[in-house]
Image (cartoon, rainbow, N blue to C red; front, side, top):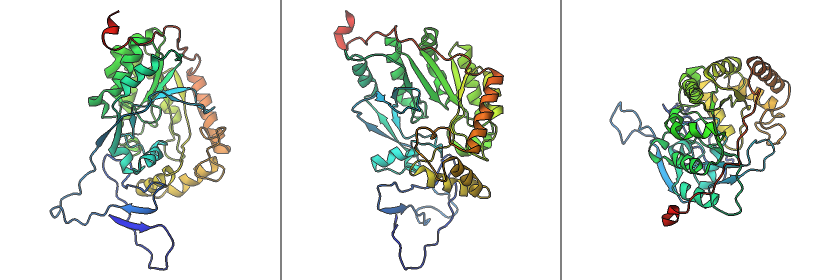
Length: 370
């Protein structure tokens, strides 16, 4: 590893070799997090591989964690839910724009490659959920699942933590909604569909664009756009209320909002929402690197438009504007969404989740027999 001091120096400037994309990964660097003093970058000198052999592709590693709590509270006024559950930290989908990337910094891991290759799995998710739902002080209200990282990312196929969460919610008749880019949600329809029939479940599928090539670059390990549309169709056929998320909207990249809404409506989605691109902390330089790697000719244009929606900055955390942006371009996006959604019939009726069916989970052991 090379250690490069960030401080200024009179030495000859460092010559940087342009980044090359890594197939199946959103970023090509273990970008240093904001708490590090030095920038550390991997350097492949070719000594450990045969001539002509490609460099090893970074593999996914699961790191187990015993969480202290599992239901997180939210008091942000621009977010529709008050409670959420995220069984995982980090996400193998590798979406370059993911606003959760900076959370890996608190673990002394890179928001870059580490975020999508070192997945933290909360091994005691189900036990904690049962404990928290069983407290006398607990009052049921909608729980949002997978709000930070995708609850159906590839490791879920084997770890089944999300499945365990839904099993507990199914047992207790607790309302929930989840957001995903994965077809993995279809596996749990045996639980989700009966809950939906009681007014206890809804699923939202994120479709950023219908352009398969762009999606593969933006979200390298997420399901392809046509596959996500099939997920919506399957959910609707099973009577599950479903919606589509068009987040994030990125100027001069995914410019097919109207087409996405039309395809999602035809597939069975009846709710829709969007957000503009958010670039907090390390996400901004990572996104700039990604633009220079994949779209160098339009990189400057994209960033200028993003800054125009953020008051001249890469990001503005103001609750009033962080989700939709501000200025002329943000207003145009809103107008396009509102008109298309209204024409198609989206959001005519909001899902009314029921809280009155909740019953606390059965106690473990022999107490469950009585």
